[in-house]
Length: 143
Ligand SMILES: CC(C)(COP(=O)(O)OP(=O)(O)OC[C@H]1O[C@@H](n2cnc3c(N)ncnc32)[C@H](O)[C@@H]1OP(=O)(O)O)[C@@H](O)C(=O)NCCC(=O)NCCS
Image (cartoon, rainbow, N blue to C red; front, side, top):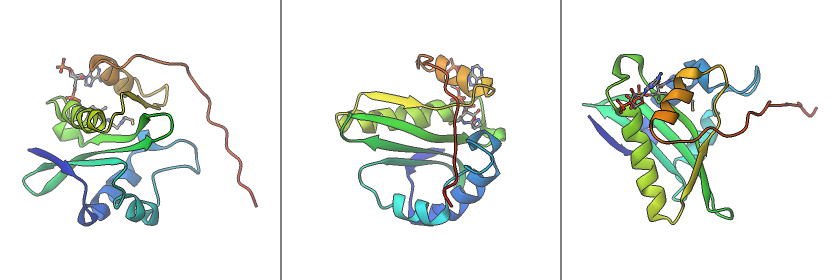
C-alpha cells in the first residue's frame, strides 16, 4: 500500500467515493466537491491532495487546502474505505500531509468534523489533534 499525490486520473474514483460518504456532508445542500472544482483543484501546486492505494485500487484520500496568508491549512476531506480501516492508513495520510505542509512552512493544521462523527473526532484526538470550539453551519442560497 502506498500514498501518493492525487492525479487527474484519480478524480473519477475520488469523486464517486466522496459523493457517497455521508460524513463528508455539511448541510442538505453542501455535500462533496463538484467534479469541475476537483478538476481545477488537482492542478494546484499550493494544496496537498493525496490518495492511498492498494496495488492499483484507491482505498482512501485526503484533500487539504493551504491558506497562504494565515500560514495554516485545513484538512477538508479524509476518507479510508471501511475494509482498510484501523490499520494505520488514515494516520499515514495525515502524517504525509503534515510532512508536506511542514516543508512549505505551514505548521497550523485543522479540520472541521460533524460533532456526531465520534469516530473521526476520536481518530484525530488519537493522532494528536486537540478539540477546538463547536460551530453550527448556516447556509443561504442566493437566488
Ligand atoms: C476517520 C478515518 C479516516 C480513520 O481512518 P483509519 O485508517 O481507520 O485510522 P487509522 O487506522 O490510521 O487510526 C490511527 C489511530 O487512530 C485510532 N482510531 C481510528 N479510529 C478510531 C476511533 N473510531 N476511535 C478511537 N480511535 C480510533 C486507531 O486506533 C489508531 O491508533 P493507534 O495508531 O494508536 O493504534 C476513517 O474512519 C474514515 O474514513 N471515516 C469516514 C470518513 C470520515 O469521517 N472522515 C473524517 C471527516 S473529515
